[in-house]
Amino acid sequence: MVIKNGDFIRLDLISKTKETGEVFETTYEEVAKETGIYDENKAYVPMPVIVSGNHLLPPLDEALIGLGEGESKHVEILPDEVFGERNPALIKMIPLKEFKKQNINPVPGAIISTGDGKGKVLTVSSGRVKVDFNHPLAGKALEYDLVVKEIIGDIEDKIKAMIQLHYDHPIYDVNKTKIKVDGKIATIELDEITKYDNEKSQLNITSFKHRISKDIWENLDIDEVDFVDVFKKPPEKDPEEESSTDEQKDSKESSSDDEVVEADYEVKK
Image: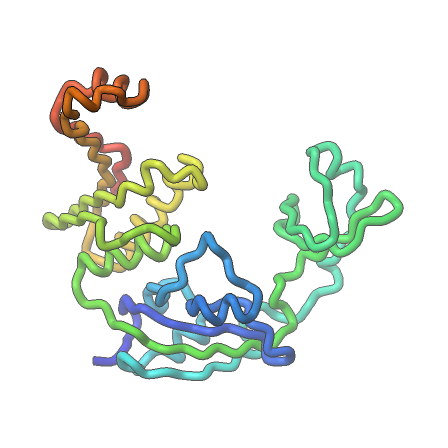
C-alpha cells in the first residue's frame, strides 16, 4: 500500500534551513531538546496529516506520493517554491506611540500582530519600531527528512488523527476519545482534559473543534460532527470520609442524575 492524495498518514520529520542547518521543526523530542527548540506544551509524536489536505507545504505533499509505510525521503525546497525571497518593502518603521496606545511593549525579537499581519520586532530606537513582516522562512532554502510511520485506514482512527493534529496537548490521550459513526453523522466524546484545560480559552477550544470538523467534512463521507461532553456523578463516599472539601459537597448537591449528557457543539456541513 502506497500513499496517494487524500490519504491520512502519520509522519515523522526534521525540518531545517539548508544554509545553516538550523532545525526549526521536528516530531522527535530528543532532536528538539538537542537543538534548543523543545516546547513543553507540544506533543512530540508522529504528525497526523492528510496528504494534499493543506497540512503540509505542497512540495512535501508531492514527495510523499508513492511512498509506503516505513519509507523515508529527503526533500529540498528552494525559496521561490514556497515563501519567496525576502521583500525589503515588508520591513516597516512604526511609531512607538502606536504600540503604547495598545499597552504593548515591543522588544527586539518579539512577534507582534498589526493590520499588516504578523511581524518580528527588529529594533526599537528614537521613538520608532522596526518590524519585519516577511515570513520567517522567506529567502531560505529548506531541507526536510520525512519518515512515513503509518498509513491510516480505519475511519475512527482517521478522526482521531485529526483530533490529535489540531489539539496537540502533551498529555492528551487520543485513545480515550470515544467516536461513533452512524451514517453520515460522527459523534465525538473527547478526553477529560479538554473540559478542564486552563491553557486554552473556550474560544480556542471551539476553534479547534471547527478545524477538526472541517477536515472530516472535506475528506470523509461525513456531513455532521457532534461533540458531546459527559459528566458523571462521583461515586458515593464512605460516611467516615465526609470530610470532603466544600467544592466536592457542592458538586454532590448539584448532581441530581446519575449521568448527564450535554451536546455542547454541533456542526453541520
